[in-house]
Image (cartoon, rainbow, N blue to C red; front, top):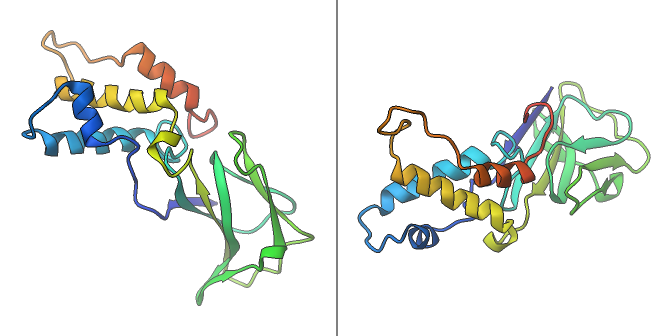
Length: 195
C-alpha cells in the first residue's frame, strides 16, 4: 500500500490582485470571498488528488510504501524537481539512507521519475515502512506554472464569482468553458486514480 502526503502547505500560483484585474474589480469589498474562491480553485486542480494529478508550484511530498521493491520505484507524480531523502520509518522515527545508496532518474522531466538502488536496498527493519521524500511541481515561482493553467484558474474563479450558486437562473447546471477544460486536460496526468 502506498500513501502520498503533501509536506508543504498548498500555495496558489495566482494572486488576489491578478484575479481582481481579470475581473475588473476595483474595490476591496469582496477580497475575502475572492481569496476563498482562489483557494477552492487551486485545491480542485492541484496535487495528487486534484484534477491535474500533479502540483502546480513546487512542493515537498512523502511517498510511504510498505517496502522497497527490487529495482526501480516510480514516483507517481510529475514533474519531479528533486529527491531529498529515502529510507525507513521506524517506531524511533525516520532512518534516512546515505546519499550513495540510491540514484534518481527522470528529474525535471514531465514524464515519470524513479528511484533506483545503487546496488540493492538496505535490509528493512521489522515493522518499518519505506519512504521517499521529494519535491514536485513546475517550479517555485508562479510564472513557472504554464500560462494556460494560470488562466484556467482565473477563469474558474471568475465563473464562481459571477455564478455563486451551482445552477443558473434558468435552473440549468453550469458547464465549464471548453478552453478551461482543454487547458486542464493538456496538463493532467492520465492514469489510474486520475481518469
